[in-house]
Length: 516
Ligand SMILES: *[C@@H]1O[C@H](CO)[C@@H](O)[C@H](O)[C@H]1NC(C)=O
Ligand SMILES: *[C@@H]1O[C@H](CO)[C@@H](O)[C@H](O)[C@H]1NC(C)=O
Image (cartoon, rainbow, N blue to C red; front, side, top):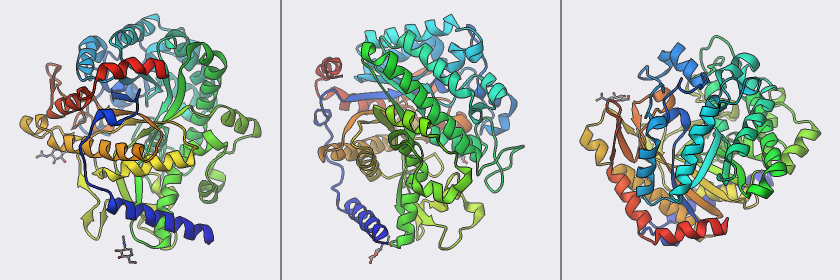
């Protein structure tokens, strides 16, 4: 009870801060710490295309979009996407022109190892990333590389049941090793997984991402168990992460001098009402989203709330696994943050099952964008994503406080537009400028108050294939005409460039390597 009251006080204090913070002030790159990474982000499946070129194997997404086009809003796929595989030099020119000092992208596992560990390494795949990384570094830009950004060789699904089978851990460890060996001399930032929490929820709770497994009341799939499988998949991802980090630290870190971490999708949650129940529900929502992955990585086991509510559906770590995890924590935490949402408790009074969203059902909380009919922020083209810049400061503080001040990189933050807006609306994206400015202002405020944040990446440099949304939404600073593949800077690209160029970008690039 005392703990609950203390928690309630802390959450009320957080609410008070939200109200008292000053509105957006002048934003200046010089206010950010020396060596701070400012960048843009993409992922392999969303931009590369060339889905069957130069020996690449089929990925889970190739298979899914080709066999289940109804699962994608516009029925399309990433076969061509932004054709980045052939146009990467042009894209790097664009990226460089903004004045960023880092570029976050992911490697396509199926391009490197078309059949996983049992087939050979695809040298043309290695060669593509070799050329890409060389060009990035040559421009004075720091590559920030993700190993698993939702795509894996389809053969992993057929051989192991994807992330449900323990055999995939060795596969991931092997894939990571091939990448460290091939690219680690130039890549100083490795992220093992991108948003494993969101991925497992969409793939195994809601059945919307491959392998599209789920059960009632969360969705209608041919097979699956939404109460159990997401936790099994997450368990295998956590142990895969630990294995790759262990290998990196043991065999590469001393000579290559890089760091390795993980990227988690993190909303901020505000209690819907002042009741202790809702305040605890907001806390629980964070546990089920963020601490689900970070507590095992930093402290060796899942959060208490998850043990209590999930009981035997939550897999157990052996004592050896616990120690493997704890000895191989992450060097940094990647935070993908876009929005804040209200949450309501569903333990004290049951919520309507049909309105449950995603994992929130297992956490017994209900997420909602409105309080008394008033939205928490302006809506965006992404359902359930509102513009709430204050949340950036809250989430960064939360992560720093719980995870012993481990360095944080904001690995994604960005704004979506509907593709069917007029060209004029798409290009004059003042809402995106306001969004980025607002979120960066609260990030800078967090840093001024002592938060250990080392970088910030806009999602995304170019419009791209947005998973189940297909091409119906656009996150790019640059507009892409998918007929001609022409890239055109939106107003937000010019804004980001002006912001970045405002304060001696050359100095920033030079201090970068010296600092790391
Ligand atoms: C919280 O309670 C105070 C009064 O105790 C009230 O003024 C305020 O509106 C409440 N906030 C919410 C979100 O319900
Ligand atoms: C634009 O697209 C969105 C989502 O794809 C859809 O909900 C909306 O109805 C469309 N609007 C128009 C005017 O076509």
